[in-house]
Length: 160
Image (tube, rainbow, N blue to C red):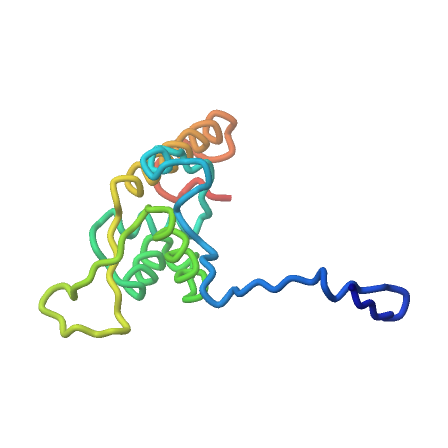
């Protein structure tokens, strides 16, 4: 027998209400339903955010920790882009899940092992995605030059 309660204008069937325990639910995974792990590795990343590209660029030079990545982004962009910790670590988490980077289990350069400092490096997939995005951007720059939006000379001299 179903019990019903009246709440303002709505009736709620209390026996139809289900419970779902989410205490151990996986909310992010590199596994896609209906696809094998091997096909997920070959799946092209269609678009990446500027923050993800900046992280890929920083790690293309080698292994680094989060603060080192933030410093590299500031250096490469001459201070025009500041990658804050929230954006950095959310992006890193997504990149780990997507297989673009991997976390290293050891400290580098004879540094003391600090639980707060984690090092990352590009995976083969991450390097391929970085190359593809760099080429896509280079192609756009070529079009901008053809349309006289930026000068033909190198460097930042052609900026408006």
